[in-house]
Image 1: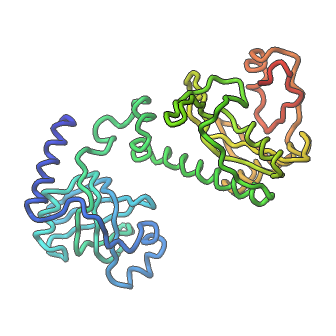
Image 2 (image 1 turned 45 degrees about the vertical axis):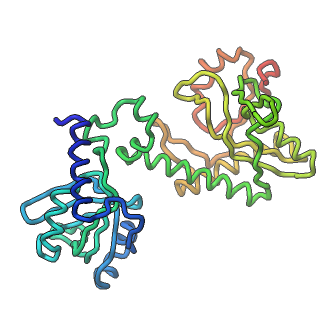
Image 3 (image 1 turned 30 degrees about the horizontal axis):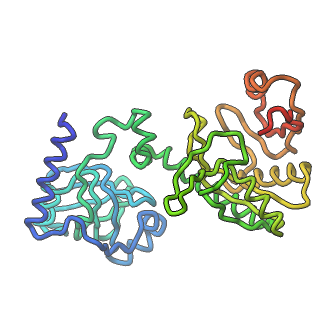
Length: 345
């Protein structure tokens, strides 16, 4: 198997070949008028309407003499293209594709839609154009992006290689959208809190520090929203929330990261009981919006948000004992109340 450097060298030669033919390997525009998802959804209508222009990244490629099939992905869906030499793709374009195009390249395809004998939606290319020449192969072609460190350091490669990881990020985006919808529907104001703070506060965590040269002062990156949200309540805002970045200069493991996104809200004239009802409604709104139901599967368990959430007093044990003996048993939605003041930040 060729090394990465050998693959890159070969692709650089193809890049030069395109330039020698007077072809811009990185054009600034595309004539794309149909997304892959739209082509799939409106296939019958578009099939009768003449040529369409689609674009995306070549994910797989199968050459068979005078025909080439390749799958391309534009971020909305994956679609199949068929190149037939002289039928109707000009021979010089077909030969250029064979010489200069690789898996990982971004391509534009102009053509007509049809169904193959096995029922596969396909675009028959009348013209194919390079949109961006890739100088490295897709991850699964060299080591499968199985290394955990590599996956988390280069999440863009992780999402490109693993559809289930991309789906997780899409769900995360949808969750944030639903949270925001719920808060705004309930009359909250979304605020934007400072990331450079003169005092570190709001939680018991070590802060990151940074230097403001113009002021000649040290500042802290925020570890919680709490103090600024309370200031806003004092300033006359009754319901406020923020979804923002927070930073804690501590250890790293599978459930802790020094930089993370945090939601916090404050409401004037509300007590703990009212807040429990609010948070229960929030969770139900988000889960229903995400799954269309209040039940979902997680780690072999069916989680059911339909019944009222349980309310349980914190047991008379240490924090460490709680984490080992009680927390693993809390499967269904549960509010833990009367948290010992000694454990509170």
